[in-house]
Image (cartoon, rainbow, N blue to C red; front, side):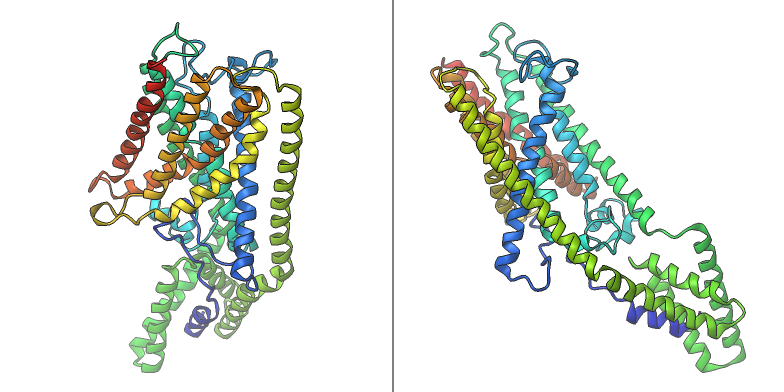
Length: 493
């Protein structure tokens, strides 16, 4: 391929760089660039809020369903559930509980968060294999997919769905309840050993699920964008031909050709070292395979491939981009309207039927949880702006995520203490308090973002222990808060 072909590739095949996630917004894992070029800032914010609320509600619903699927047969959410497996346990009515109620949901959410990892994060964690994905918003999809620039959807899936599917506060509440003992299982007493195992298992399995999801995302990235072995062979041959021609030109003393060959070789090396390596390989392979006996035809074919590489996606996705973006927005709007309407209807129906019934967790709590979930998600999203705002030597500390998790823990400990101490609560009052715990507290706290931050902070190991420090501070602080708030309410009964 003629050196000018490489130069044309570099100047023509220039994709607008995708904005990357700032260090201060760890929970978003994606830049907030406009979904449509004609959106005003107010319209853009409306799309963001729509996706955050819709996917947060779906995350709460999924978490409740997974809890019933794996724990209903153990007596967590009820009895008589048929052939459902008894996997998780609250550790309050019988021994056990290291496999806590929300463990499957935390694992699933962390795995999905790994699938949705941005290219910059993958390049940071796996620099030897994921460098080509740097700058890609969602390596799980093809790099030319219109959804790569749908910021509202990506934010909704990561912060809204994964953040609400996983819960740090509910996990800590169960661990503290097992450590303290007391009601509702005074006979069992404290299970602090099982609780400590639950803390370790919850952390390790969520981190493992995140890594597994990232590995699947990397496999998908290479499946979408990596060239075939035959293309790589053609590329190597083309590079060898170019090197031989440049050497021959230098030996013959043709200064003009020598300069062109050197420039072409330098541009080739630079191009192959960038994130657009796969596209460059495709351009070279077409040039090498188009007409091997004609250098002029190879250059012409190379220019034609360059034009195809740049122009074809724009022409083919001009309509598809709009359709996919609107389809994603329509799906979010449908989810929000359906879940809100159904939850309101069933909440009114259930509370009317059971308004005089007393119980620890009436069925209507799940509808209040779905309705209240977006409030916790939006608050966590706003708190994420505090990440990286701590001054001094702790500027690396994710203060926003830490504040969200600890605030949710305090809220859940207080609500759980009220449910324990106040005995004459109606079914409606119990449902609302439980809905605050599962909905607001569950969505305000997150495990999926927490394990991502631990992973990012651990990249500098063994030079510092920031990842372990952040993990330890979060767990110990939550447990101490629980012992103070919930323990006091039990011990003073």
